[in-house]
Image (tube, rainbow, N blue to C red; front, side, top):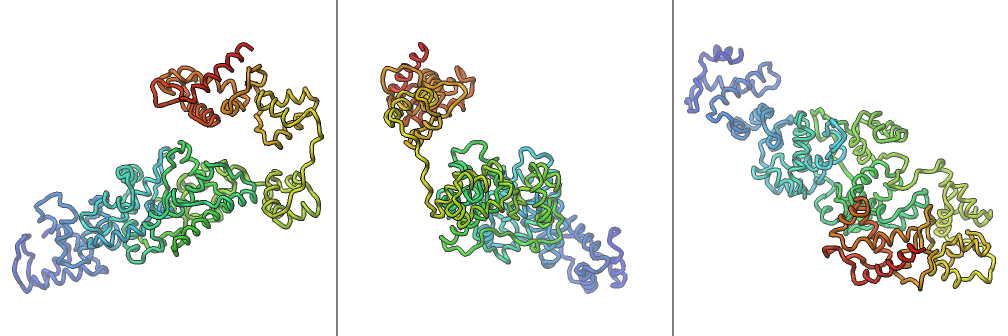
Length: 615
């Protein structure tokens, strides 16, 4: 009674009664008690009254003192207020929020302005999961991602997956725990994802902004819905089901002077396309190197706007193909969440013009971080959310842009290109110099435009320089073009051009001659051996492959004669076997032995090495 607010004493005096003793039993009907309770309830429910908060805090603490369990959970404490109505239950939840776990704060929405007793059925949560990407939207991740203490070993993807999983908990049934919520989204790294949220990023952070934001987002999704069914997309689109229009991609590369790249580049673009479609980072291919993840992050930052627009178009085509009338990208509006002070910087807090200018003038991502006072991942997430990227392509794309992109675009336009080549009579080299590209780019664009190329000047005829002669000397005898050109009094360019026109593979020149063209071999080489020694490092290749059999493993062989570089040795062996067209070493046997075809190949290689050593 001594701790009761002054308003309680005033009302007691006016009603001519006193407070009953604290008890779990019913004190029975009493007119004075009913009048006192009604008056106190009206004050407790009137937010504008000066004793509003103090009165409820006193009543709540008095009721809690009756609990026989000292560490009762939020559910048991708030349930006692159910007869008083949802408003007082909400106030009780708010009062209990600070001591509740993150799971409880989300389930009861106790950190939000309007806590709710959880009453949603499993079907509602399942529907919410279809509207949620497996990784939280990039813009909302920016707002909830606290500044990192260090840029090393950041698991932002795991943090995003953990947040999306926690997003399923508000209002759900008691059996819905984090593990079951993760299964709804296909997030299988449960401990890693949950730990990234609670123990890595929010270990020393106030969880209130996170708990309030996710709970408000969850109920807003239930109310307003989402234009994207992510569950359906996760089923429809996988690395095995998506396709990339490589012809259209090649045309874009030609138009802008980028190298189209090989299989590794296309895998990066497929990864980015799948990421656009399903709203999460797809797993790396099974045979991808450890550099794949770094190149994916680099692509998020450096993808040119034209290439990103191309991939967005590819994503729209995939949606249309499956009859889906959905936008490629979408995020919940910020108006769905209120009364939260976010620990991170959202995309709406960064001026687009400033962001674009900083990226254009920054040499590295760390320079951009310093200028914008945000982390590396905030920069990448802002690129994902806004579509603004660094104007200069990196090695991921393969080439920096030309100095005058407008001039290139004008010169390489179809009609302009036709005029330069047909009417003005310029050759490919002249056009390439004007546009700042290579002659091959101009040639390919002319072919796409339908302009026939003028014939190449023919080489002067020499009766002693024939196809048969070059085939025998260069391919069969493995002699080098430089020596042949010197012997016959022609230029190296003459013989190189002739070999290219005849379709002969050109051996790359090297600083240290290590080929076999100077050797006096007893007979012609096998087809597999010719393919393997078409390199200036032919003898090195043969010495390596002949030393592998007899060792327990490739790693053991590397320790014996390759400086311990087992990965490099494996790559060297694969290159030799790819050239030969069959497996030379049987890796399933211990110790390593040659295969049936490899035995004949190694015998031939040993003979060549003996002749080389004698020479």
